[in-house]
Length: 374
Image 1: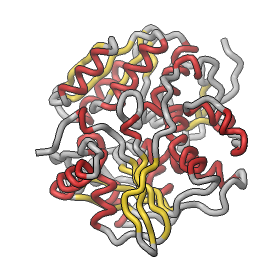
Image 2: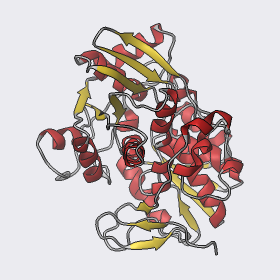
Image 3: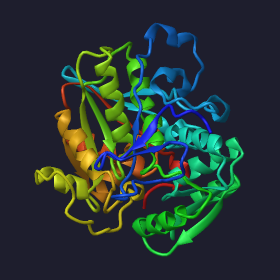
Image 4: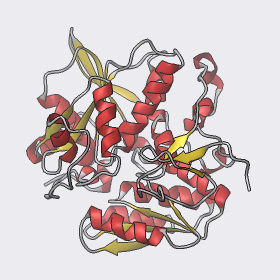
């Protein structure tokens, strides 16, 4: 067994578990794990000569002996200006140019590297498409047997991509929440590593590299506002981790505001935030939405997400289906073909008076995965 260098920790119960264990949640409250891990400062001047993947930020990442070996060159995505004025500007980070065409590669490479050192019988994931695709690809890279649970009606192009990487698919009747429940039941079986982008904190330590890249790209500073789409909140919580690390190490002078975006059709976090609640009182009604990737009625990390947004002076915005359609076509007219979920932030920023300074939105998934919204 590898020496214990980090540990899982429940943010509610403070129970810890070795990261070598296949236990995927807190045994007391069944909630998701955090990672008891302290990062070191990343030396900005040394980055120019480092590997061109997210592993360039090695001081900020949990120790993973097989990390670079399972890399597909993920990260380092372009930052492109969309609008500008005397008071503020908006730039987009093109995370749909990742190896599997979505930002989920940032977390999937961390989970695959961690799983490889544990040697499970099977790696299991549940997803509406993009996370499953990323786990399948990086699982293949790491030589791991993978199975992906998806809700019925998942985009055929995403299913084809998952199968192409050699993963087995289990289609679950019902919505995204039903899929998660089925996967969690299977995750309790012996020898299964649950590569959950929600419950396993290694995923969050991968998504935090999104903000480290912004910091590097902007010469050691951060945008004034970072806008992110939120369903389960993995990109937002990763961003919050990075902001606290960079600020805590004295590498930035201030924290940017984190602005979270949800589809109006499924917006439990936005409703809780504007009601002043610290947590959800129950699952939201899962109405149909083009933004399927963020249509999460009961995100397990809701309390953490709400706290993270409030701590930075940020807010929640919601977008309608028509705003999503308009934003997708608008970006396509600018040369950027992004899937409907991935345009939510641009839809929100376009409909809201811009904040002062630099605002950055992520374009999270490629339009080729789902096509143009009808």
